[in-house]
Image 1 (spheres, helix red, strand yellow):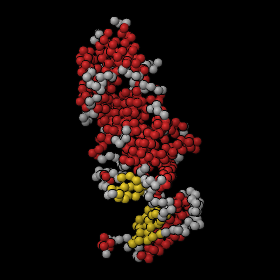
Image 2 (cartoon, helix red, strand yellow):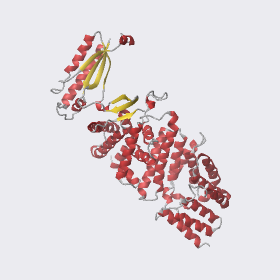
Image 3 (cartoon, rainbow over the protein chains, first blue to last red):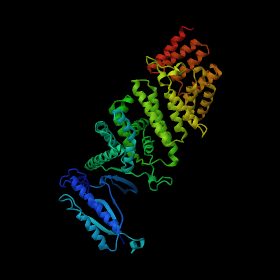
Image 4 (cartoon, helix red, strand yellow):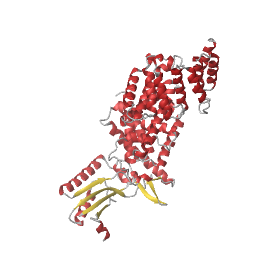
Length: 139
Length: 414
């Protein structure tokens, strides 16, 4: 069964990881960043080796997002629709594993990602079952 | 690496960096600003610190970071002003065109199409093309067009805003539009070349650089579209015309007509290249106006002397050109060719008919050609009057001096 693991972060999180000073956010040193990168690499590598990884991607900073909405029936595009502190999707893993609990266990490991003190305080990771077929959505 | 080598490299990389950014993130206007800043940083750092291992990658990385910063500042400001950065999707986005290639790497060509978009005025198209594709700074473009830098900055900002509101997508125009849009690109390049070639005012050096820039950009288009007849024709036309540049003006800056030019000062390499290009492309498909004009220029440039010019061929080509173009100047040039083949009276008859065309009736060129043919026909008093009339019809000083000198020359010959 397939599940999607969703990692969230805000523009401010992206900024502080990029080494920009952000009031209220911890500073990421070079070592912090390297440790985080090392963790993420081994996290995904382990899933490849266990055969559970289907796909994984990181998304670019929220400022590069476009939002499309209808205004009077016409699709209109807004650039950068998110506020600086808003938690948005930062990356995802699609895993195929034997149960929701197993997917949850994998997702929980993400919260052990190293970082400067306080970086993970508001970390949010979601897990959602992926519909196998249209039939499942109709149920 | 010397400063000039760095500059040349940066100019070459500029459109590729901008193309990569716009393709990835959109925001043509802001991406262009970010690219400019990256180029400035490179121009400062590379000569002293040395070239990075991957210059293009370096520029893209620096420009991307700057783009993010600029967008953040932009959007924060807009939120404060309660203005929202919105635009309407172009209707043709709903389904991608069936002929869209999976990975289209012709970013420079796409940039050119964007900069020459019909929503922009010709002046804006030119300014934006020189900035975004040519990699010239605003200051350089302003000086080339003899306007204050502030004026050029406003023009470029306005042009970028027009592109944003037109929501031009970053991809090649649909096949049905492509011919028309390519025409617009070629026209802009031709205008840039004409500005550079005219050199009717301002320091000659800057104008020469414009002509060289037009040739450089046209070479890029030719490399991307090697089988397009009109692109090849335009490149050939520019080379064959620019080949005569050094012989066009005398020591005091006075204009010298082609018949009187010292042909040893013509650029043989440019002529050889232009002739090869036009010879290679003619006959492959129906010839368009640039190809015809290039063919005419080739005939002039290949003649060892003015007297050896193949005027019957030129006359035939102008006749073909007249079918494609309603431009009265083409008819004027045709009349000159007719006069060279069938005698001045035949040419004068055609000029009389042109005199009823409002677009050229009061043009100094019509009067000047009329004067020249009257002189050939032996009617010196009438020729002199026509030269004097021509001199009053132009505000261009070098041209006035030339025309008045012709008139003065004929006084003694009565």
